[in-house]
Amino acid sequence: MQAASATACAGSAPRGRPREFDPDEALASALRVFWQKGYDGASMAELTEAMGITKPSLYACFGNKEALFRKALDLYERDKLCYVRSALEEPTARLVAERMLNGALATHCGDSDPQGCLGVISTMPCGIEAETIRADVIARRRSSEQAMIARFKQARDEGDLPDHVDPEGLANYLTTVLQGLSVKATSGTDRESLKRIVQTALACWPCA
Picture 1 (cartoon, rainbow, N blue to C red):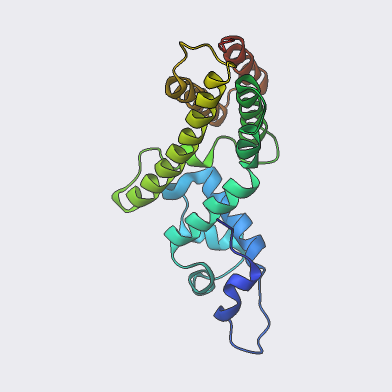
Picture 2 (spheres, rainbow, N blue to C red):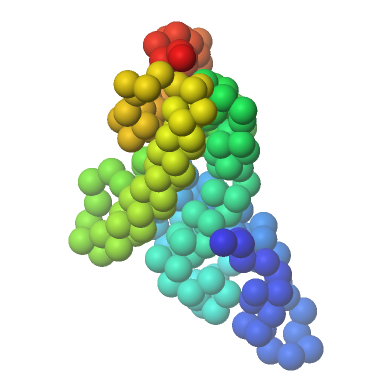
């Protein structure tokens, strides 16, 4: 999926009237608010202030809060989680895990972006109105896990992983470590401690 662009909102302003904001910049600002607060924790007042727009402009360009979050999640996956797709193309299963773990460390535990993973933050306990968002995030995560399972099955078939290794179990293990890194980063664990977790996970990786 592609994030909202300036052309996506072209019909929301009267003809001949110049646009008062850049939709791409506004969406990036909304992403940061959702990333910091989660879906439930981000208020419309915080979103419009960060985006520099009014509520009518937000609704006209992006739809309601749920639609805005989905567009922000698309942007997050495209720009912040691009390492996941490239990791699956690595020649060995261990390199897949290494690239994913280090990618998560850089993205979720860095200095320039909010700490933690937007997907993990947004599946934390939430109100009834946010259940559809939670279900969407979980479905996206499941799709990513299925891609990992397929990659590890390939690795086992090619002799890159031992015959006794369960590809689904290995993918679930890697996903659990990735989510754990996010939770610990959000709770303030320092980067060196998180790096040691990555190193330990890789040290436990099965070898053919």
